[in-house]
Image 1 (cartoon, rainbow, N blue to C red):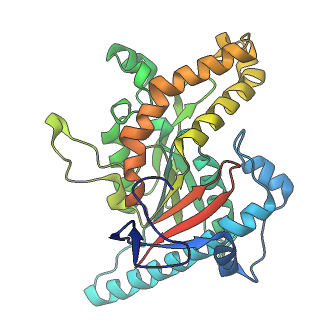
Image 2 (cartoon, helix red, strand yellow):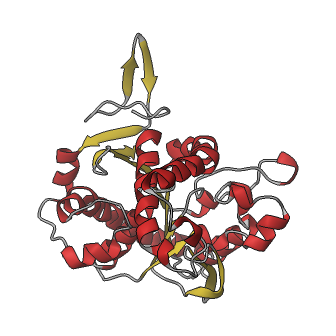
Length: 330
């Protein structure tokens, strides 16, 4: 089990590690007990839909969606409904009419762990839920500083680290969304060009907003190393961390790099076109070098430490399947 969260299967409360009892805020569910929570629910996706939603290299089938993501969507439906009831009751109590604001879900995890697939699945499943709510999905990639800025600051080789983002703009975006401001926009990012685009994504008061990114649960540091007064997670109503051992995630990253070398990297306009002609051995060595220099350290220092701050953790096995779900107790 990854460090930081020790929970026995199917139990709640304390767990004994050696002779020391460790208290955990999480309840753990194995695959069978988690799937049972959505018994009787109909999966609103077919194989063609899933092919459109799954990220390159993320092996997933409809049975996995029914086992893991459908129960999660049903749980989120309950949270959204409860949030609306609380908003209505608080509005009545305060005697002042306030506009209902979007329910915000944060999805965090490493590069290549499958968080993008998770975010897209949640968007599709929630949009097909009760009342057919409008669900927008925004990735934090668009809030990366442009390559020219990163290069001028000596940060291009640390792309994805917290300091490579325009964190003030990201925080302002989420604050505007959560305050009910209409027609908020988010910058877009091209993985092909490996840079921020001039176009922007419009976010106009959706019922639900899914925000996906590497560091959305991170506390971080402000100017001069001071702890900031406001975090992104302060605006979340629910958060999901997609988890796996670093060994497995590194292997998935290498496999994805090899797949991209055969596909997207073949485009002469692609930022990483220079890798298209590598042999298998050279590509594997290059991918492992990038992991060792960038993605691995970022995972260990900045991303994995935020896992325990999530409301729910999806723990993946080496075959990409979710082997266990950890849900924070209310």
